[in-house]
Length: 227
Ligand code: MG
Ligand code: ZN
Image 1: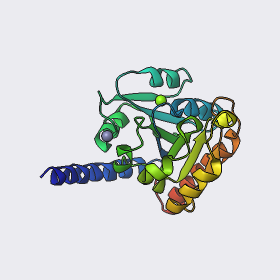
Image 2 (image 1 turned 90 degrees about the vertical axis):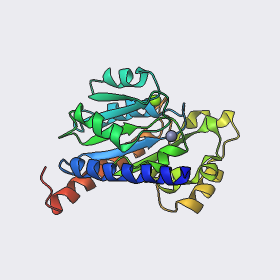
Image 3 (image 1 turned 60 degrees about the horizontal axis):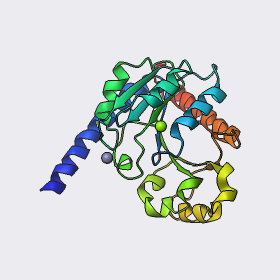
C-alpha cells in the first residue's frame, strides 16, 4: 500500500515537472539542478560560478533549504534574483515547490536558472524538477566512495564536480578511485576537479556551463521555440 502511494506521488510530480519543462522552454534558460550532501559547498560553488560568469551571462537561483534563508541571503548579496524554498524539514525539492518559486522569480531572459537542491545524496535524485540537466557534487572531505554508495545520483548526472581539491593532501581521498566507480555508472559525464574556495579548476567548469548555455540557445533557435 505504501509503495503504491509513493509511486503515485512520484507520478504526479513527474507531470508537474513536465509542465515546468514546458514553461521554461518558452525562454532559452538552461536549468541546472545542483545536488550534493550537506556541506559539500553548493552555495560557495554558486557564488564563485556566478562571479566568474559575469554580467554577460545573467542567472537566477532557486535555493532549497530545510529552514534558514542563509544560502539565499548569500546569493542575494551578489545582486542575483533568488527565491528561497523552505522545505520545513523536507529532505528534497519537488516539482510543485519549483513551480511556485518560478512565479516569484524573474527567470525569463536569464541564461541559467540554478536550482540548489536540499543537501542530500539520496531522494533528490528521484524527484524531477523540470531541469535540463543535473550536476552531482562530492567534496574531498566526504570521501571518494559516494558514487558507489549513492549510484542513482551519479548515474543521472550530466556532470560531476569534485569540490575542495585543495584539501586532497590532507585526506585519503583518491580521484582515481572515484573516477573508477563513477565510470561503472556513468561513462560519459565530465568530471571537474575544483576548489570553489580557492578558485582552482573553476575555469573548466564555467567553460562547460557556457557551452551548455550556447547549446540550449542553438537548440531553441533550431526547434523554433520563441525566445
Ligand atoms: Mg547551500
Ligand atoms: Zn527527500
